[in-house]
Image (cartoon, rainbow, N blue to C red):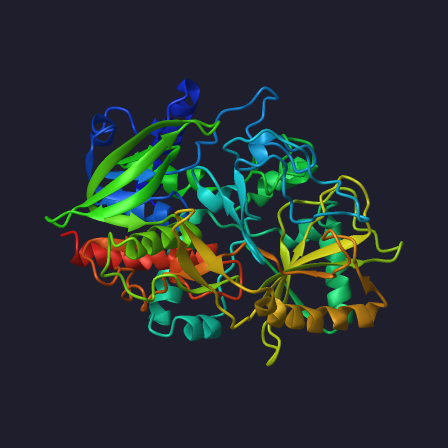
Length: 538
């Protein structure tokens, strides 16, 4: 990490801390140009969202000296609640857990057919949202840092051969030689100590699944992470407060995770040119006759009360609100006639990254352990299977008791794609996806885990998803596509039909990466903003 980047992160982290201390919803570095224009009605650059692509873009814009405003519909998660913690655990969720829900909606709907994981809660601007579209629902993070707040931290680079298939017009030499390494450095990716993995209690569940995979002749691989593995080692030794080892993952981590607010976003604030406005949701985009942009922005409080509806102008506009958010903004703008020159490709090419969740029942002597790290560190790599390629996360069941259950999130190569349409009645984009489109993913996962069960004499769990299904493919953690690179945009994220309008998030990727996608999103954003700064913002 460069000295300049380290200093920026330090300064940005201080800005986040001071904002939390006084309850501010607009965050910037005190005494800088960004602070001076905090509530200005015009900014040279606006970035919508604070997830991976948005964070990269804001850092590079700020480092280039361009005043930039980031608009985030969620809140800044930096202030402890009455229990002394910023985030609740999975075992005792409260209103902080979910975005304006009356009950939590955990991915495991049941255990022994009982709903043990969910709780009734008060509607609130919580950290995790589950957006429902009929046969598909999508998990997304809400808050400064987006999905980095709620994911399992698995920082995986896709296999080069598959990357070349999904984005053939992108120079793979550049991606693997420059931009993936740059992304890993910026994210703070680290690797588990193999010796500690073999002896610790917190990955006993992963070692059991590894043994079963090897019995079936399958390969496993360690997975890099943005969770600090040295901190986790000290967690197990009870030297520091527990987070990954305290059932903290999908509702946020209080310690250990290098989420974007501690990496790219902190560095962006540290440039002195970036301001983040929280609880600001962009509803509309209009292009002025002079070529500038005007955004209609709804400002709310954490309880959902609308405080103001205001407008913000920009010369350069970057959409980083994620596959759902960015796509909805452009589908709405096109179909309401506000941006009529947008391509028919807007809204197309959406996929689930082939996500399938499943569980297996182990024998009594194959205990998974009462202490399970919430951060996966191992995967089953069967991506080279010619018919049914699968990369399967060995996931935890951090229940705090022995469960004899092995859980997996399988990532499969599913060619099926959905698309978005505009629904005028709700003024929203609706995903068109049928349950049958998930069958190729189930087929691939079943092919792999049938082999594991046959080799070990084990069976599937049928009690985890609220009914008797062994495979859950009605949700995704990895929404991708909607504004596909080279189709809705050019090869660097410039939106076709309009100048100075860009996409910088997972909506650029056509539905699949074959692995957890956030490193790919980050690296692609690094590539794109470098070209845009050189050619468009000179």
